[in-house]
Image (tube, rainbow, N blue to C red; front, side):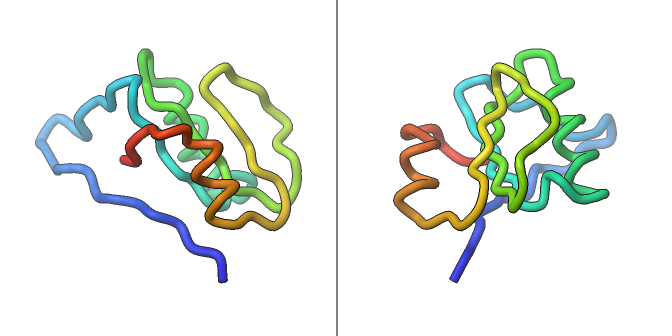
Length: 88
């Protein structure tokens, strides 16, 4: 079975706290309506996190911090793509 890890950010009155560049976000559904908007916001952050997108079809966009795993993924493929970066 496929699974994704995520942790919730601390809420603050001014919005979410910035993510350091040494971290990674695992995003499932980056080609969908909501996931696409989440992806755009993550990539728009100056000094934002690396994004590992788990998608069924290739993404139309490219970005230095974006890595897409297309098709069927397993735990080994995800761990290799993260290269030891902690997940947010």
